[in-house]
Length: 159
Image (cartoon, rainbow, N blue to C red; front, side):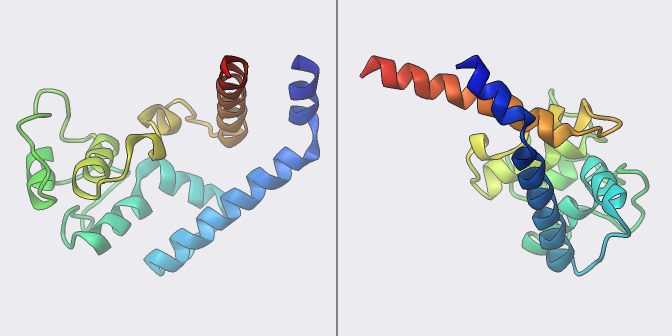
């Protein structure tokens, strides 16, 4: 089993699919926000600082995030203001979220307002732990593959 997984990781196929997924995500964000990225580094920067992700939320919930004076991912509004605009119950989370934490604000809006299941959302660590963004997608997919592989194996052996 381990040999098969190692063979899978070493193949160029994984790199191809990662590149394809990243390109597709980048193009979707460009079309949705009507703003082109300068290059792939600009795309990564936008993901890290939430520029385009917050613009998408603003298209769904106009004025939710104030991006007019946005600099390096910092918001000019408080978490309370953002979540009230998005009709997200603020009282449940007020002790757990900082006003500068756009990632958690975004995730709460996706969960409570847009009703996106938690398992379909990224984790805040997905953006935070890869400051340099050196192949974060490859690492993430490898971890997910191993997790799913062993989950499936457990189900198969159970039945």
